Structure formats: structure tokens, C-alpha cells
Image 1 (cartoon, helix red, strand yellow):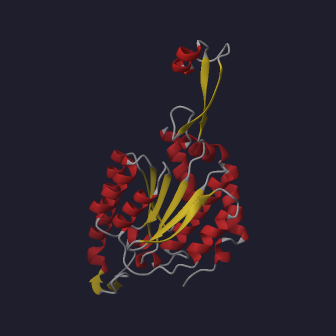
Image 2 (image 1 turned 90 degrees about the vertical axis):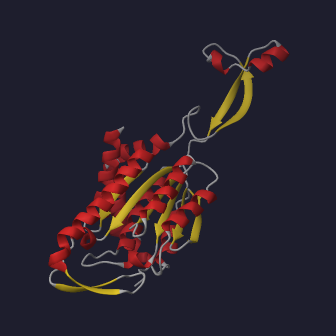
Image 3 (image 1 turned 90 degrees about the horizontal axis):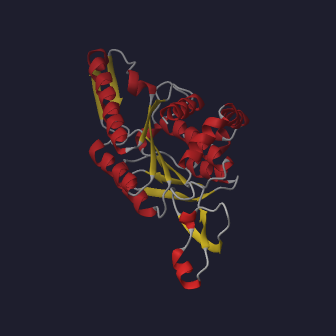
Length: 299
């Protein structure tokens, strides 16, 4: 079932996001502003013009080439690009449609998180765009900072029915090729594919200078495996069916998922990527708050 955009924009959701911003304004601002460029150490710094040297100016800013030609002291003025451009990169493959007993599927949960982050960025006057992928990128919105952007992002996502396979690695390589300037790339996926190529694609994004946050969204049942007895499972992307003794495999399954997440955590840590493991039993606003708090405490 594809949810109507109005469900994501209903007043209580807007109030929740608003409360999140008001409750933790200093955290959110610190998080986003920490990613902004400083005038000389950040993303891109563009030369603006010369002006005469005045007492109090830093002598390091004197343009000595101009001095050699004119015998006068001029300093360079710069204009820094102080806005960080963010892109929400959302997995809409068939496995993202799964939910066991939670109200939200993994895709719904990802959309709620993405909506909150888009709302926060736009209210910081930071441009935010969208890229959607399954086996490849198949929808996108350019980054904008106007208030209507949140509705446009949700409108695109609400009209996409999760289906088909996933090739997150290929899609992330496409994302890296499309981005011309350093950006904040926020990925939402269950990562149910070969992790090796995905980690390599994430490294490519980092090597190109992008900040990356990986929101690893799993269903509560995929983390805790609350099944009992002989249970039939259906692979959502291939339709393959399997009957297993849930009680017999529970311990190994839970351990395998924990190891899967831990491997991503380690590789992301070494690459300088923020890894955020989530499951759909945690309210999305609380999940986002805990992530922002943990980030603030690390820096």
C-alpha cells in the first residue's frame, strides 16, 4: 500500500518535528553548522574583491602580487559558501515494504526520518534534495532550501511503491558521479545485499569529500526474530519461500544480524562515516534525537 502524502504531512507529524527542533535547537544547529564551511577551511571559498589594507586586518591576507605592481597594500576579500547541501538517498526496493507488527514499514520509517531531516535543513536555510533508488537511481529532486521542498520530497516518496531488487552499491556510485560539490549524503536503506560493494561505494563518496550518514533501517522482527515454531518466510525481492523452525534458528539469526551491523559500524567508523543502526520499534523522532545527541557528545 502506498501511503498518501497527507499521512506524512498530518498535523501531529508536523508538531512532532517542530517539537524536535524546539527541544534540541542548539543540538540541531550545532550539528548542521558544524558541517558548514568556515571562511578558509570549509567547502569552497570564492574570491570576491580587493580592498585597501586597514589596521586590524590580518597581514597574511595581503595580496603581495598587487603590492609588487602598485606599491600599495590591498587585502583579498573572500565569500565563503556557508550552506551545506544535503541529499536524502532512499532505498525503495521490495524489502523496504516489510513490516511484521509495527505500524510503519521500513520505507515509511525512512520517509519519516527523511522528512524530519529535510524539515530541519530547510529551516536552517540549507538546500536539501532527494535521490531514490532500487536497482538504480530512478527518481530525484534538485536541492532547494525553500519551504515547499518538504512537500515536494514527500510527494515523490509517497507515489513510489517499493518493489523489485536493490543494487545499493551501483546506486551510490551513481550518486557520487552526480554530485559536483561537497554535500551531506544521508542514506536510508536496510542494506540487504552483499556488503562488500556497498562499503566500497560509501568509501568512494567519502573520498570525494562528501559527509555521509548511513541510516541502517531494519524492521523490529529482523533484529529480534519474534517468531515461533515452523514459520514460512518469503524473500520480498525474489518471492522465494522457505519454511524454517524459528525456535531452532533464532539465536543464530539474531547473532548474524548483530554481526552484520557491527561490521558496518566498524567499516563506517574507519571511513569517517556516521553509521546509525535503527529498527522500526523506536519512534523516529526519538531515534533522530539520540543520534544528534550522540554526535554532539563525540565532538
